[in-house]
Amino acid sequence: MSEGLFPRERAVVAPGAVHVPGWLPLARQRELVDACREWGRGPDPYRRTVLPGGGVMSVRSLCLGRRWEPYRYLDSVGAELPEWLVTLGRKAVAEAYGEGGGLGDGREFSPDTALVNFYGDGARMGMHQDKEERSGAPVVSLSLGDRCVFRFGNAENRGRPYRDVELHSGDLFVFGGASRWAHHGVPVVRPGTADPALGLAGRLNITLRETGW
Image (cartoon, rainbow, N blue to C red):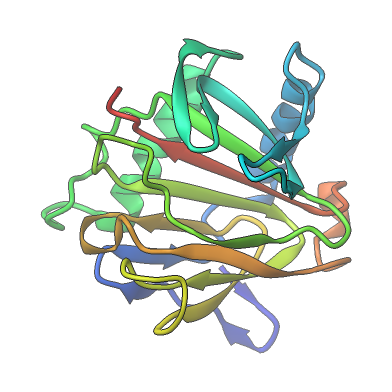
């Protein structure tokens, strides 16, 4: 969980928002990258999402489990959300909040959708809320590949106050409770910063959610 001269410490970025650096070991990261590649070969490959106003997102995305499109969930289910990924999500919530943390220990977390985003050259994500879900369960975010600036803001608007956190490959970020509806985005990805042993150019982000639908 440390890189360079100084360790990257676990941090509570805001109430209910927890950053755990280096949570995934390299071997597990490789397994997830392989899984992301395999999902992309399926019937629903990575594609750029077209927004209702006609804009096109710079990231390429695919859904596992319940399908999402801007800005709603569909009744249909796409590629299967594997049980091992659900289990990983529960472990992530337990890691973030622990026993008696007031936000659950992960056992009740039942994600039914995963959004996988690939950030290639020049891709970014504007400030937004994950608000199509009926459930107030935490959101679990796993980072793979290139480092990025993750901007974590407030629930009222897309501007300040916000806090910028650098996410590395293998990092875990969980936000729930008072921070569940906070705006967040990725203004910068740092190309070429991934460990070459990972075999990934660009950044992958896996986000697990409970839709409540």
